[in-house]
Image (cartoon, rainbow, N blue to C red; front, side, top):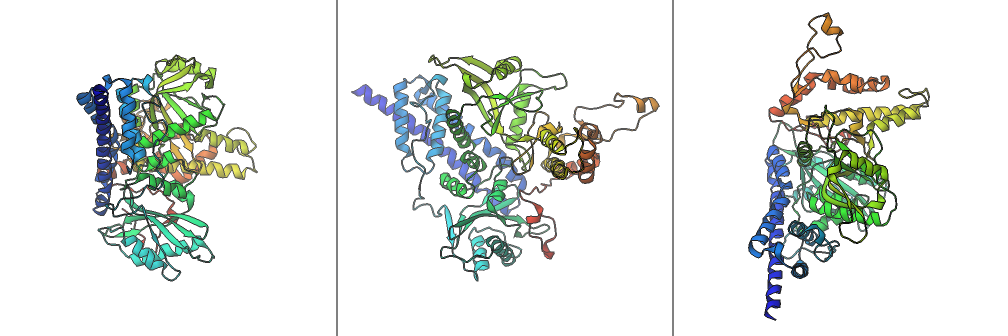
Length: 613
């Protein structure tokens, strides 16, 4: 009996140590998120950006700390499997009444898979499915704030109640004119409601923590009237050339919220005691947005990965189509494949690249990490990164297998690892992104709609012309937003950009990106003589970070219709002075605004025409 009791004690101690490791992680995560309020109040924009980058690394650091402790104190990797089964059962017991059980389960999986061999990754040792429900978890008496607050205005008291709602967030910087801003929001809400009667249950429900990102703080909630719900968000910004705050806009409806919580934007900082309650509330406002993307948006990317993989396995079980080489122009660095019925693409770094791509696998991974940690300003797709991913072999198109064998053999294994007769395709390292329509295909579809030859538009092609204009204007806007975020895309060909379902252009080819501040923007020198002028070769010296914007035209604007639109809206992108001007601003310490909503949604009365800082 004694050895059995001793084994049980070891199992409990391991489980308790893992729970202590998670609690430490979430305490640090939450503390850093809560500090975002002070950084916003003091306009510490560089500190906010730095904290957003550093917080991403918290999880892996805590997993490493915990696994090292388990090896040091309990020789966890040498424990028999029946001990690990007991560890999981003890851990489930520790999740009772826990406020972040789903995050704690994911942490358990991360630590366990770091210690145990891959063949042990199954239900007995990790949480393939959640063991504890996150429904109706309530704050304890020690937690002063509930998940959300409710307000009950009348038509007459709308402005006053909105002003009180804002005051309840206790921002330690005064508003320029809160009464005025509350009136603007009330007018916008009345316009959204339309000519409807206010029902007995008319109310605002507002999440009790502000959402911080970059230079903004967002109040997020919903307006309820009868059976109707209207999601809304109110961005609060610092007023230019002053020390006051102002509500900048009123965002209404699911589409506005989807843009705010886009997968192409940096993660929010939110102080949450019960994250699942926040996710549930946000899901009620954006039912089309997957839960994994909401967890990602809240900075809980590991939980997002866990949920994504569960959704992916569920989709595989309920579909029968095959993985294939993704449509479009093949990349020189990444091999891209997809499953037609699944709205994501899978990207594998190739083993070798053509001579013009002077790079390495580690450099490419470094670029993807840069994007993960950087402000993506709605213009760079977030990625999920996985290692040792197993797929059923029968779901792979033979042509795709041949492509992987040819271009990425080091990343491919086809075998029956578990010895159960099921052959698997194991991809050693893969990035997963939201699928978009490649911009070159989007533009070609517009030309095809014109009923004329490739690159031409027929006289009745109004719809195709509108699509081309929308795509070209958005392409230029995307590049300008990236410039504002200190990102030079590198390879700016149309094929490296995609169109989202909301019509936004997003960049997704990261192997050549650089910081704007690391680039040297130059004008092409005048030819020295007639021989230089007639030569097809470059007659001037070019450094490794030199960029000549005026040379972009021949690569991008060969089509006359595209060129006309581009030159009308974005001719400045071909001028080195545009790029150098932004570089100088960034080097001077400016954090340039990029708004996650359209300019026309902003409140701009006569006394607030100044640009926001």
